[in-house]
Image (cartoon, rainbow, N blue to C red; front, side, top):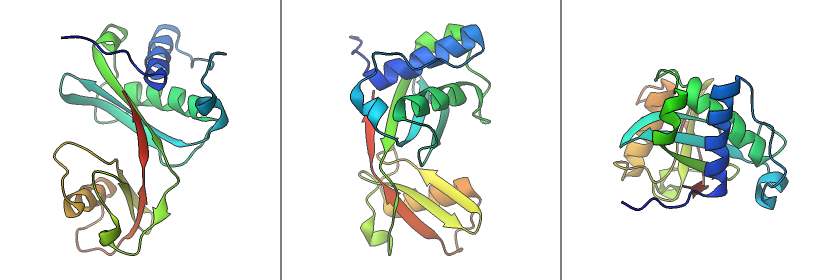
Length: 174
C-alpha cells in the first residue's frame, strides 16, 4: 500500500505529538509555517486513528490561540494525551497513527435542521450550559437526525430537549 504524503497541518500535528512525548513540553511553532497557518485564527480539531479505530480527538470550536498553527500544536498534544476516552498515546505508537486536522469556519446559528447537511456541515447543539459538537462527513453519519442525536448524546442532552443549533464547515487535512 502506497503511503501518501501528509499535508503540512498533519505534519505539524505529528511533530507536535512526537516532540511533546519526547521532551514533555510543547513545540514552538517553526519558522517555515505556511501563511494560512500564521495569518488565520480558527477552531481546530485533531483526530488520531490507529487502523480503523479512533485513538483520540480533541479540538476547539473557536480559536483560542494567536493563530491556527498554535491551535494545531495544542490540540494535537491534547488529542494524544488528554482525551479521557483513551489511555495516552506512547512515543512508539505515533508512527502508527493516521492523523487528520480540521480547521473550522466560524459557527453560525441555524433556524432549523433543514439548513443542515451531515456531509457538508458540522453541528454544535446547546441547551443551557450543555454543548455537543460533531464534525461533518463522518463514516456512518448519513442523516441530519443522526448527526444531531449524536451531538446531543455527547453533550448529555436528552433527545426530547429543545436545543439551539449552529453549523460550521471544515477544511480537512490528511
